[in-house]
Length: 145
Image (cartoon, rainbow, N blue to C red; front, side, top):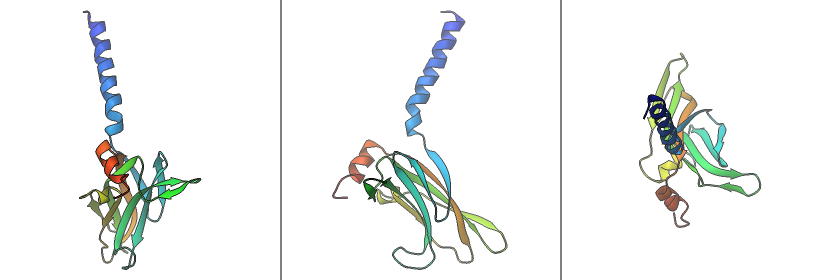
């Protein structure tokens, strides 16, 4: 084979690997506190801050769920799951610190949280998500879950 054919085969091989790895790769989005972002396939990521104990324990949360204007909301995501959340906190002097949360169990794939930090207010969160695997989808979409 000449060099040109080898080069074309190499480029094609890299393209095939890139397309097959694409769905498995994670995507990242930054969301202001109290806002949401549609991430595709009618899944939506919502961030919120719970300053006092109420329905949820004090802290910062990122939730992913299915949202459809016609059919309504489903508390479970249908396509994507959360992989990591980094929360940015700021105090009155302007000092910024971060806290990161990763899922520890199957429920954390839908709702991640970090604890409240006294003297600091969260202002944004960077959320990493990707498509759920077949095993995760079987568990999450199970009516008994």
